[in-house]
Image 1 (cartoon, helix red, strand yellow):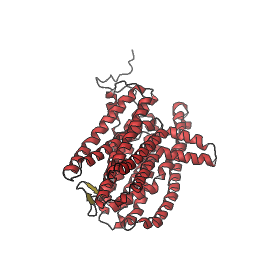
Image 2 (image 1 turned 90 degrees about the vertical axis):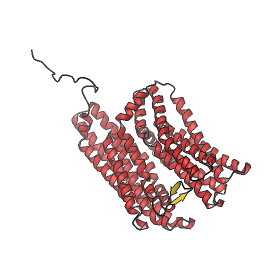
Image 3 (image 1 turned 60 degrees about the horizontal axis):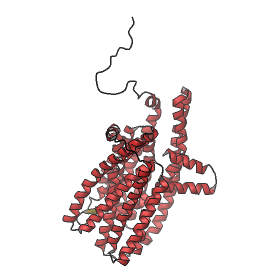
Image 4 (image 1 turned 180 degrees about the vertical axis):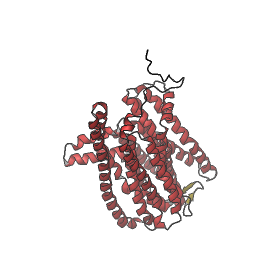
Length: 479
């Protein structure tokens, strides 16, 4: 992510209103533009194709299908993303570009295994138990796998800092999906929900193909060192656990409320809780700008301090190292506090506007009762993730695992307890879980500050690690 900070520094150094607007726009393109494009196209499809005129059961089946596609594609693609991202970054740093293709295909295989097997089981259940048309089931399966591929390949293009291409591919794919849905519905009389689902499949598959073609243009050689990828995955297994537990924690509170008496079952296969899920969606969008703020301020300003510390370690005096470390940790705390202050103002304004406007458009009752606590929970959770990123910077993988695992477990347990409470307290599970995870990450960072010299200078090994007979402990013989 440091390359983004360098780019933003160049933009903001021009010190003009246009530069600041351009910098904010660049941050949006890098972080949330693909998601916004997909949401905009889905809304446009519903308006243009008269989705609201369909009967309730058909609308709910389509909505649950799309919901499951996005949630579980993100969830099943998450375990290997962090470790593969690190492995690819190491290869680029070492100029071993021929090893990137083995990394790509190995990760693709693992993602396919993790994604394909549970989805296949679910599709059989949807068809045989739910009685859903086989072509509709197949369309959902294609959309799920296509989105998983798009998420996975996007990881490699992100490491190559080709963010504009990623956004362009999503714009192209979703534009094709929008046009195709209109064509299927108005020229071939395809039912609205089927036209929308098939068009989304085509759009997401097109995105994955465009991303893959771009990847092939960047990396043409293949060393065939697939074993090296598995060794790396085994060495940095903490990254797999940390990233998966964080993503799982994003949805565990939803899964818990899917088991309550208020849940709804569609086609005997899809389970959801409409008021809680809608409140979660609103709460996430209330705080989504934290990703942009984190990118445009925290990453941008912290990188120079981190670089200064690294240079001091390589060739500086002891006092220079201590001074650089103190400046670096002061910068971390300063930027985290800035993130909290700015996002708190933005979230408060969005929250007040939502409470006034949403009831006029049919959002009210239980959804708006759940929304306030969930908005607070997502606010704390996104701040917690900023601390996890800093733990990654210091290679504190155990701290990242402890933070994400604590967040996941506490959120799940407290959400289960919250199901027994009044509606207004339903979001307390996420609030407590996110705050607990934030606390763990904060104190882990303070620990890293105290033990940074030990962590930097005392974790290496003079002898190369390996298997075999232990060398003699005699280092000197006087004759």
